[in-house]
Image (cartoon, rainbow, N blue to C red; front, side, top):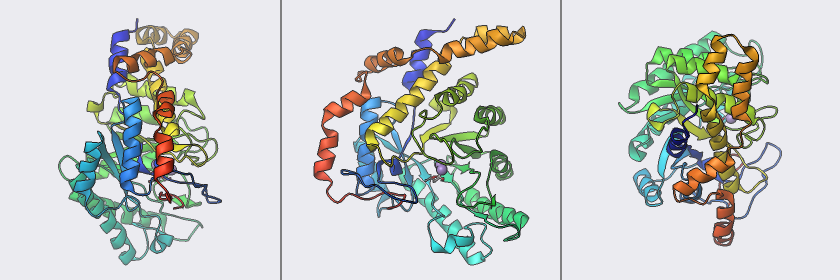
Length: 388
Ligand code: LRH
Ligand code: MN
Ligand code: MN
């Protein structure tokens, strides 16, 4: 039997981090469709994140991406966020948008470029010291397009060297989240293409290096929940970049393309007792809203994660384990699917009402007048990461 009060407590305690860049204009390599009212600076992105938190109650931190969110005074930016009721979360590094990085950043054949890239990673830790952030998120676009273009093994050595220097600079409470991605922008071989490569580097570095799973960074058909289960068992799952994909790294709203997959992932989290923030997994969104209004899309994404989580929490684990133990294939699957097929929207509405929130965050946002206000106030807003 499922303990409904415990399910509600877990849902109330859940935390989801939103990304600053999802509030700004974004696009594909073919076109950035600008929207009225988008943030013009990091402060306005944080203000939008605070609005998402105000209506959902579970998104109290916002991830920054440097240099997209560079400011002169990070302590002041942190105070600004705190005043709005949110905190600064992970600091994301960017060693992929500079001409120098054409042949790679930390794996570049040129030692000078490697130095520049590593210095950026170290600078990000300086920023973390000022924002109080614990997580340094590293994603390397490094890779090669043609067989023979560079030495695969030497590039791993260069990567390890840069990671070591970065890891050694971490403060006692700080950690590295090493993200992997199968391909793009490199098409033949990426230097951190999969969870195994990330995991191996994390093991080499030490216990404060963990893997970040971006759900859009796998080959079609990859069983992501298996990766989740494996890394949890090893104590090396540090974070998610949630989004959905139909084809490649689509960065669509999480739970939009495959809500069943999101449920299966969240089940492994619940199964491992890893949902509570005290466990230390950063559940972040990494999305771009190219054609839809951004704030309601992010609220929708937060709600999609909540729905998948609620269903995962509703799995009757006693019944499931009993069926599994007796080798009852159909019953095991039926118990699992029963939870997935439950309409959890009334339960989540109740959880929100219990916390003093509007049970329907999107409707509440629409009624709030915030959208009209930012459209009127933010004239000339075009600041974003991708395609800015
Ligand atoms: C790379 C990535 C990584 C970047 C973000 C903007 O595809 O997922 O997390 O930091 O996109
Ligand atoms: Mn990502
Ligand atoms: Mn991505």
